[in-house]
Amino acid sequence: MLLVGIDWADKEHVYCLMDEVGTTLSTGTIEHTAEGLEHFVNAVRARAQRPGDVLVALETSHGPLVGALLEHGFTVYALNPKAVERNRERFRMSGAKSDLRDAWVLGTMLRTDRHLYRPIIPDSELAQELRALTRDRADLVCTRTMLSNQLTTCLKTYFPEFLTLFADPDRPVALALLQAFPTRDRLQAASPGELERFLRRHHCPHSRERASAISQGLRGPTFHIDPPVVRAKARLASTLVAQLQTLATHIDAYDREIQRVLKLHPDGELYHSLPGAGDVLAARMVGELGDNRDPHQCHHSHRPLSPRLHSSLARHALAVCLQQHAPLRVGARLLSARTEAREETCRSHPDAGQCMAAHHHCHAPDVAALRRRGVPAGTLPPLPCGCRDCLWVIHYPTATPPALLGRTTRGATESARRSYRPRAACDQSRQGRVAGRRPNP
Image (tube, rainbow, N blue to C red; front, side, top):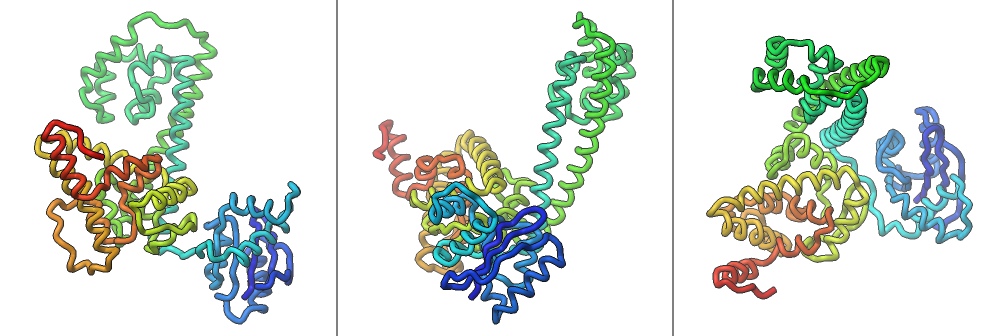
């Protein structure tokens, strides 16, 4: 068995090849090209009988290098850069750093602590495509937010009245109006009828009332701003508006593509059925959680997890796992926030109190306990409530219910423990509320 540590970079990578005893067999660099990678693969396979006998350690879990190594049949481990940094101090206290030393540390970690890590298991092509689409869409949304903030700052400089007319200047109708009337003078010169026709053409509700409000809002006194500043900032505002309009068009195209790919994924319907999960959020959960259902492995951070999700240690491990994986953490927080908003709406219903306590707090741990005892899915008791967490546990008995995912990401361990109480505790709590006394903890 051969152990390879690769310190990856943008243009060339440094590798260290060693055996199971720890003897360094060869070192060198790998050019970040197809020819350079093929030369490295041929040199390594000449020393190994099977591709599966080659174990490779890197500090990343994605990219062309990782994909090429997996394609050639190598076993690839993605190690946390923070763990590599700590192990570097373990072998040498000096603060000196070199790429070859990092590659040697990566190979040595595989030799001594390989049982603590899990190899990368590639997801399906649909899951990989959803992961790439949702991440790219999130970057585009961040860019849109940045441009919107720049537009707000620009308007405060030369046209502050526009922000009082539209609280969100990045709305399509606001962008179109600013593109047609970039200054206060040009917007003030437009008649209410012209504004009404313009707003109606851009599908603005209550166009007549809105046009009248715009005309009346521009009649009051205003700041005196020098004409050169107005002309320069109006040009900048027009540029930002054009960029925002283009971004909005492309983000809509991303949404349609994400919706199409999500329908093709076998788990898309399940994720989409979660409370408050739309197309984009469901696709993000599918892409970030992946297709791997190993109960003792967190696929992206490669940290072992216990299937006993109701224990505080497992919740802490899950929280650490999500802290290391930002896209999954953001998706879990969004899902948790939308789920809690939906639950608050359900709680406002006069007959929803007992239903919430019955299906959300009681059935999920019971079904999970039956699953851990090896009860087949066909013999599980029927769930009259149709709880989303219960359905999740039935489909993926060793996976984490989404509600618990969101709560652990925000550090609410105590809240998650209270939410997943046994049935007897919920019954005692309801009896205590009826009797007008505080229930026993």
